[in-house]
Amino acid sequence: MRSHLSANLWLLALTLLLGAVLYPLALLAVGQTFFRHQAEGSMINSAGQPVTTASEAVGSRLIAQPFTADQYFQPRPSAVSFNATASGASNWGANNYLLRDRVARQLGPIVKYQSGAKQGQLAAPDIEAWFQKDRFRGQPGIVGQWANAHAGVAQNWVKADPLNSEYVAAWQKSHPDDVKQWIKENPDNTDPKPLDLAVAFFNSYSRTGPGTFPGVVEHKSADGKTTKSIEPVKDGTDIQGMFFDMWRQDHADVALQDVPADMVMSCGSGLDPHITLANARYQLDRVAGTWATKLHRDPAAVRLEIEKLLRDKTAAPLRGLVGVDLVNVLEVNLAMKNQFAPAGEAKGS
Image (cartoon, rainbow, N blue to C red; front, side, top):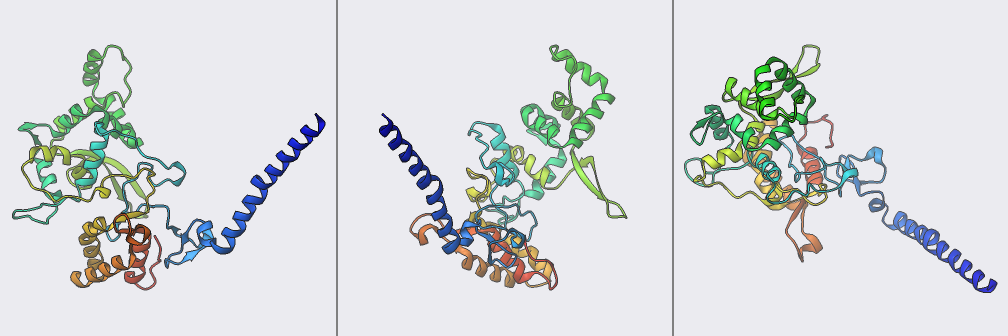
């Protein structure tokens, strides 16, 4: 009995030694000796060169990060706001309106006409003009119709920013008749919160502010401080995106260009560092035009230079044996900044 117990204990100790100590140490030694850059997270510096210390890095080749400035290529949408500690997807099904709403918000500012007098032009200005007329399917009150059709989206607006919630709370105090009417229609809730009153608020707002939407507006004071407030807005990317779906329903016969799927659909992790080459080319007009304006250069010449950068940075999985051509967003944006940024401007993402 003792001999069997001793043998099993020795086997356990040997297994722990091999599996929990020697094997990890061997992998650590191989990784740090032959693949140190990859072992440290595939980080790169502002010049696009591999580095192994976080203080020198501006990002990782493997983790997407947001780029919002017009002179940069933008990554795929992220359901986790590019938070590497919360990798994941939204898990919204195809019949979930929240997915349709998110895709519409991506499409509104970028979709272009496929044919006609405005071929190749953005539809965004026409979405704004249609919104300002305040008629959907022949009826007034676009904002109210939007809230009534999609109460969940209206509630998401209320809780998206503390300013929004405070604004609705102030409306609640100043509109007791509207609140009483809501309580009458919802007798089980006699003490509604701003979130509960989202639809009622937007119906009221739609009547008093036709052709506008309550948006967060930033103001910068003389001393450089930035303040935010809710004000009526009638244009901008929020209008273009939030009301694209309704505009599309009112203009179902208008031909629009197909948009690469990865421009509007997030990946499973929310951290995909690549976009397809088709996606990059769709963004090329905006990127090249912004750099040309910034540098006071010929747009065509700038476009050719960026196209060359894209060709240099394009690769396909397994050297092209499978998949489509991909572009690493961080690498190509750093390459553009290093090539075009004025002397003395900080380089990096």
